[in-house]
Image (cartoon, rainbow, N blue to C red):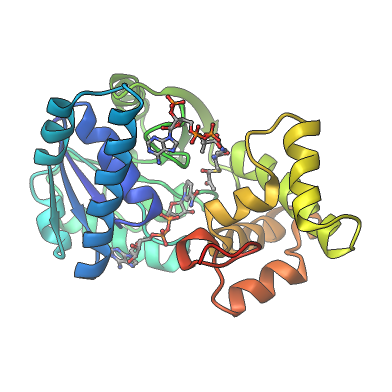
Length: 281
Ligand SMILES: CC(=O)CC(=O)SCCNC(=O)CCNC(=O)[C@H](O)C(C)(C)COP(=O)(O)OP(=O)(O)OC[C@H]1O[C@@H](n2cnc3c(N)ncnc32)[C@H](O)[C@@H]1OP(=O)(O)O
Ligand SMILES: NC(=O)C1=CN([C@@H]2O[C@H](COP(=O)(O)OP(=O)(O)OC[C@H]3O[C@@H](n4cnc5c(N)ncnc54)[C@H](O)[C@@H]3O)[C@@H](O)[C@H]2O)C=CC1
């Protein structure tokens, strides 16, 4: 697999594009606005700069990586020569199904179509295509260039060959993999949401301040980030979508706390909008 299409250039899409390009893949990154593409390119440059400063890569690798990434507003353009297309648009089943109809229409017949969904049904997304055996969940973690895991999700009709190809390219770009069944939330989102939603409730009940809930988990349980800080980092909109899907599958224990719903209703999605549980302005 030499050419990779990435659909959606937000938080995850730009990190996935960067990771692929750093391993020598040609990447075509697509979004619906010029502004989103510009923002993505800036984020990639910043992240590469950070890796260079830390001594992980040299200037030549930065230049090479950037030269391998092109951007487009046309989904057809991102598909037509790609061997693998990774979708990273917002966590909404209807939107993803609409995108996959188009991926199926425009991508070469050999291409694998992967979704970066955090918890939605890969099987349902695959069902709108004529190649369900070549559709798979490829679940990355934020920040994509740094996090070690890719959670591979095998839909009902995903072929073993498709799984092998995704295991192989994941390894090629320096990631470890786990293989999971297509169930709501897989392993990681189910586990992470249980933890984060409970911590939001602890804060909402006034048991401790925002800072102290985060500090307790960070220092007491040795997590790299506190749960509320991490929720802002992941995106509260994504957290809310995920919890709503998990409620449908597993019931009330994943019910979104009021504070999460209100922050999303107010347009405060976390780091990406400048405000969430914390302010970043
Ligand atoms: C919602 C879903 O579906 C799935 C998800 O993604 S859930 C969320 C998963 N992600 C997490 O849980 C992240 C938790 N946080 C962490 O692991 C860490 O805080 C972190 C890696 C983000 C930052 O690490 P840190 O030690 O706190 O800060 P920092 O020292 O700045 O960074 C550590 C290293 O990562 C690098 N780094 C961090 N973010 C980076 C980025 N965006 N690009 C490039 N490099 C980055 C830094 O340069 C640094 O490198 P060195 O140690 O070699 O100097
Ligand atoms: N935020 C996180 O930590 C993680 C998110 N995910 C999943 O990745 C996906 C994307 O999440 P984020 O990157 O956080 O969201 P985001 O909101 O940062 O980015 C989404 C991007 O998709 C673009 N977009 C919207 N409609 C589009 C369309 N029709 N065609 C092309 N692009 C379109 C938006 O303009 C935006 O740039 C979601 O499914 C999410 O659940 C997976 C792992 C981690």
